[in-house]
Length: 214
Image (cartoon, rainbow, N blue to C red):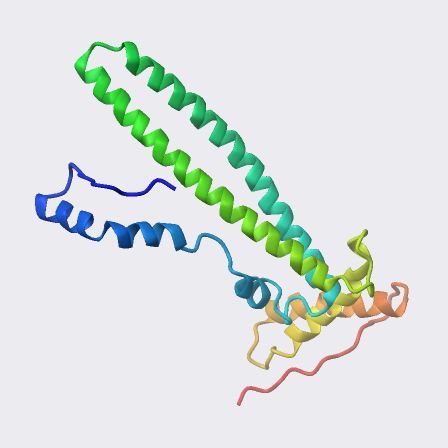
């Protein structure tokens, strides 16, 4: 991470630059410990919450999805980082031979911007690795041998049924027709499939009474 030393922002008045320089140690600390991505606590209660992911299998496979997104983003960031390094080297090399005063100023601005971007990319990459590590640990914690970890489809009928039951329990007589259909329609279908029933012309599924608003 690029640390603030003595800075002079040209758009600020002298007193404002003085204030920034006065608290530069605090600002460096802020940049070092600021939160970029989710903490482990947020992963557990926000992403893998029991209502949306009611089984270990559903939590495990959501962890797989989340980890996959982060490794993809890390790969993409690596390409941006490499391009930025090439740009930085080109600007630095050009500055060595540039004689025009204003072009030199522009080149130095570009160089400073590349150095800043490089530092930010390194910070982002480090925090992406942290979250990838957390997902790896969560997957190991969830994998107790009670479910299939090679084929995602195996767990879904049961996991989604429990998910939809949780959602159905929040429906009330005041819920809109679309809300009811979006929950009860898939739920009744999954219940039929989980019972092994074939589709017929008769109405299937289990009727779920709606909670009355108080």
